[in-house]
Length: 266
Image (cartoon, rainbow, N blue to C red; front, side):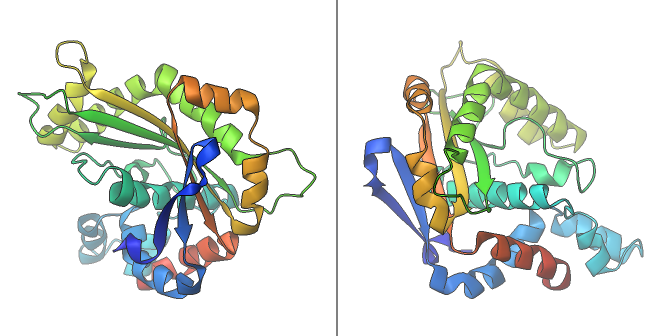
């Protein structure tokens, strides 16, 4: 899917706050949903796993897909934001990442939240010969589909920055161990070894990039930005975080429609 057909990177509008916007073309919403159905479904169940259930008479296609999708409204909102930001990151931020774990496939059950760092993209082409250009890129994502009252002082960016700081302090190391274990359990030795390279950043340096992102209702976007606290911005600057925002018109209707039609068309 060519996300640059639907999103434009805007580094100017909120330059003073250090926020990069991935601006969605709301006029192309229907086309985007149609293009996004298969990649979205693959984020929950791979083609191989789906074929296995169907070919062995375990489930019909619709049920096999539906059983993987969350029911709880807050998880639908949150996971839509995470998965969308995952694809945006792969397109616009880390196009050279070769370790791109689709962690939603590893959920224990449909309404279980994912563990640890929301998104982690890594680059390491050879686990036996690590390079100083290897990197880990983490993203904490917060969604906000509910419109904000103009008098409110809330901002999902404050929450995202707080979560990204936790990534920096502790969760990235835990995520490396988690990914290594998951790949090993999947009998994917190559990926497990590539991830394990990041256990050791002393022998051969690698870059760590921390970031926070929000996926919010377009009309509420100005309030999410206005309400970012000085403490949050200071924390982001101290941690050298990148900040991203993704505004979509009728965000709730968009992700609800996607969750509704994915079992049918996915």
